[in-house]
Image 1: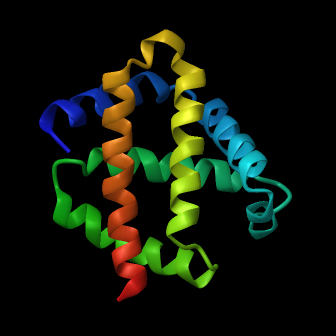
Image 2: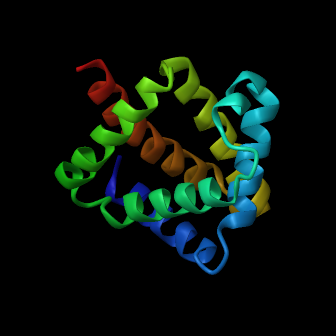
Length: 135
C-alpha cells in the first residue's frame, strides 16, 4: 500500500464520517446476498454490528501510517473471526462486498485509483487478520 493509496482512503473516509451507516448497511446487504450462509453468524438486529464495523474501519484508517499498532489491533480481531469459522474465502467475499458498497455510495467519484487504494487497504487488514488466525 502506497502513501498515495493511504491518502485516497483517508480522503474518501473523511466524506463518510458524518454518517457511515448507509454504506455499512449496503456492505452487509451485499455480503449476505453473495454469501447467505454468513448471515447466521450475525444478530437479527444489526444496529450494534453496523456501528462496530464503521468504528473499526475508521480506527484502522486512523492507524494507517502505524502498521505495527494496526496489525496488533487486527490480530485479536483475526482470532475472533477464526473462532467463528471465517477463512480466506470469507475475507475475499468481504472485500467484494466492501468495494461494491463503497462504489455504490461514491458513484463516479469512486475512481479506479480509489477502488485500488481501498482494495490495497482491505488486503492489508485481511492479511494481518488471517496471519493472526493461523498462528
